[in-house]
Length: 438
Image (cartoon, rainbow, N blue to C red; front, side):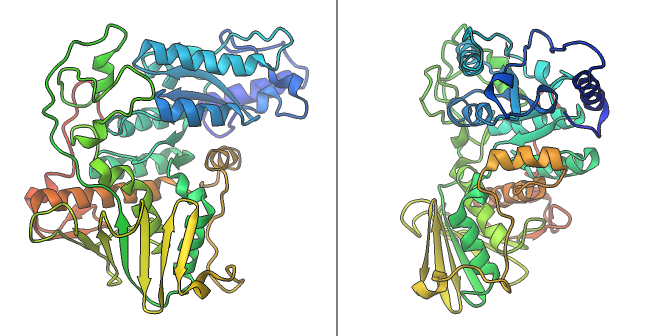
């Protein structure tokens, strides 16, 4: 539906001419637009057409359902490496759209196993990426260069190099890019960040982040591969290894553990850390920067590493610093603890009144998916733009590299590189398996 880039400009203008009575009734492929019966909803030529890549539990149960319920979108294709996930997702979407037809019957959502079929479609405006971390940058870059807007799950990248390349591509192609860091659309985290920015706890000194530890090497044995799985496509740019159900379980609802292995993810540091380090970055106004030093614990443990920022603030990775997962801000005049749906302050008076007109008010979003869709129309940045997601991913990678090397490291955020450390800089990128490239 967009007007500023290539093929979608042609599609939008043609659909507009149809709406004005010039031309004939149009559908794309076998897609029949169905929402006219819902009354007061977006016309077909104004809907944002979506393709979803990676239909695991998170995407099927939350993202697919959420986007289906937005009346100004139309899901036209889904992709996954498992046959049954493709079929289940197509059925879910078509049953939803069928509710708007008298017959209750709708066909027109294409299910594919190769995501490139989605990226190459000229009638798709935007893509949603919910694949494992090792795929994010490659798939996002392909979509960006094909002229799509992108919603990508966190952490955005598997390496620092991927983060740098992704930021440059988004800005070059004027992509509307939303990082799936939905805590930025949670009032409790936004309020915590506003309190810090507004100086309610005095001068910020320390931030403690409660998330899991770094990943391990994947030494799982090989297992017989299910016939309904495209294992080569699951591996994609990662080095080849045999199938194991722990990485890609066949049973839906079983939590995969690829996050726990460095070949595919960044452990607990990058999983929930992509949420909580992100709020720390937001509260410190560091969306386009990062720390200058990485200091791991001397005892070689995987707890206690801290990141020092140019301001003097230290951000600590402390898996047991608060109950649950979240983070704590400590300042000269008090502290703030933020977890999902709750923000507590000490003393309580710090959070006892709303943010005033002279204080810092941050970007407000109460619907992370809806915010992205609104920004696709306005061409303005969403609440979690690519820079925020990329620099938070970098923070997670720095923590993991610090634990891996076990020594203090100097970091230059403007150069995306360690200072005078060839060994550490060698860990900023990975070799991608052919034919995949950045």
